[in-house]
Length: 239
Ligand code: PXP
Image (tube, rainbow, N blue to C red; front, side, top):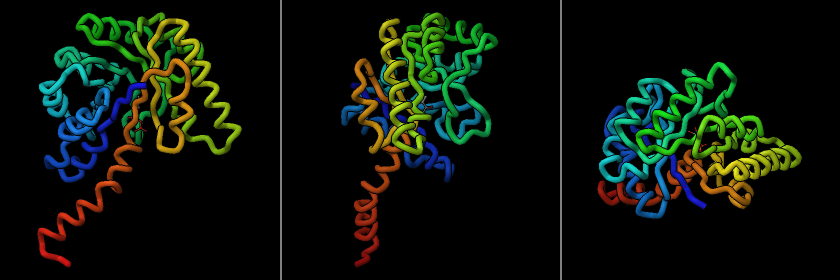
């Protein structure tokens, strides 16, 4: 099992003050040194967290470890192909959403632009993942589009209200994984995975990587807060 660490929310904290700290690139170096397999950053159209400069700096350290999430736009395709990152995950993006709202809408109208995007990225040597809902038809479409990877959206799984629904959503992800492996796709999953719900997803046969952000960054606040407080007390001479 591989772990991709999404560092968008390190950048969210930095953007709150418009300065340079905390640096998502520094966070990436720490995560990679501690064994994260790759770093996930979502460059949004509104640049609310990650900026191009973050990705360019990280590319200088190790461009192949960058898994760039982006919408299918000319601006993003131009940027990704100039960055030459290791992989890209194409995601749907809507202006006022709090976070990615679900998998790509693979309706006919969107297929032409997706096919072109997949080819453009692959020509530059970038592996392409499609963020999709765990639906058999979407997996078959992803294969037809030429994707290397499917990332199965676990948003519904992470938001279930009872055990019966949890089992049903888990089964959807399991069945989707089986089909994707039959079609020779690499299988990832992500969105809303946390310290309570991740293990059943991690145990799915054929699941190869999990992309996790918010839960890790949220926990890091409490893991790091004691030391941060002690450092400041020492500096100002507080008892
Ligand atoms: N995968 C994709 C495609 C996402 O859009 C996100 C959220 O940015 C994640 C994984 C990570 O989700 P979370 O922050 O809830 O772990």
